Length: 458
Image 1 (tube, one colour):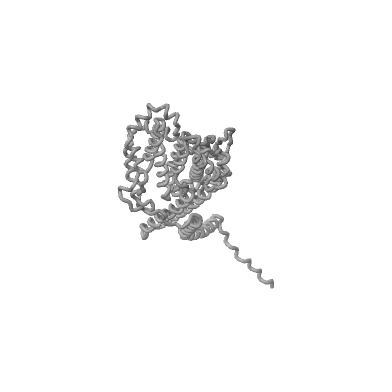
Image 2: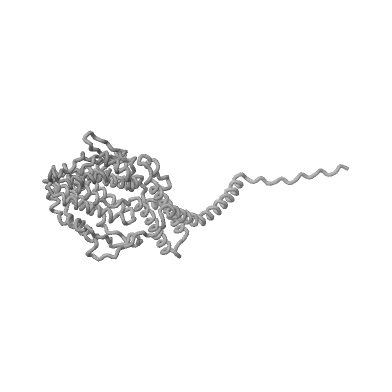
């Protein structure tokens, strides 16, 4: 009898392809959901850590993140800020006149001001109170009325463009006064503009640093024209003494540290106010906010590093091209990176050093020392903060005069300042030596004093 046939194993039911796809989709979706939940949970911690690391980088480069500016305790009598605001409010110009003063004041061309005297003199007289109020701040300290490092403080609106209008009026008034034979008032205007640059340069915020640079630029152009009319050694020495101290590099470093601390303080205040009321979307928004602030700190460090770059390298290294995410990130625009910012501040600082050097050589020339010898003495005792000898081009002339230029000034004016009109002066002529004549041919003491002075200089 034959054995029974072996039973074939039961066949597995074939799962339809659509069901398989749905099964795998469900598992992949579940895995992605778990990963997204973990990422969402870790994102605020990661963003907070990025912010802390960015702040630590700023502190390592720029110094302690603490306010380096203290509100002075001043009475209204020795406070310049109230007078500056009063000067701004005393301006009486319509829109067309304001634009005219702005253009003429920025250029500061004595010939154009003299040619348009009939048009400009009435505007200055109408705003004489504003100009005189600005000049009355000479020697006063500044109290802005608020603490720039208080998250709840807002600077007065009058600290802006209207004060520059007063400065532009003062520049026009100075050139008109020089044309009328009153250079003393012009020198007084130049000194007050230097004091303004010093006042604003002491406050480590970007707004005040740009205000300081503006006043310094106005002063340099005015001093540049006043120096050409100097005929006795004491004149360039007075103009040189009117230049403010050159602390732009330290001020910019303090600005980066101070504003980093201020933004961290505002951020902590916002978090403290929202504590206990945060749902998941709010936490994600704050995480994105942390990420954006960290990017802003990195951009500040980028600008701080740009201070030591050659101007021809700044654009390639510092130019900020935002990616697609940064373009959508409104928080990253808390500070709009501008590669010209360190270039503007440093170039103005270099122009200030070049002005001091040129005024020193001009005083020497008016005292009888030729430019080549004075330049040699200046090289032997170089003490300038930003300007280096390699950046100064000296063009010697047959009459023993010379012209000082900042090397690469054309590029700086065109690329950083957008043209030569707003750039500080980088071209300074030094006259030929004119030794003072003695009062009498037998006045030996005076001649001996002059000769001994030359021996000391050489």
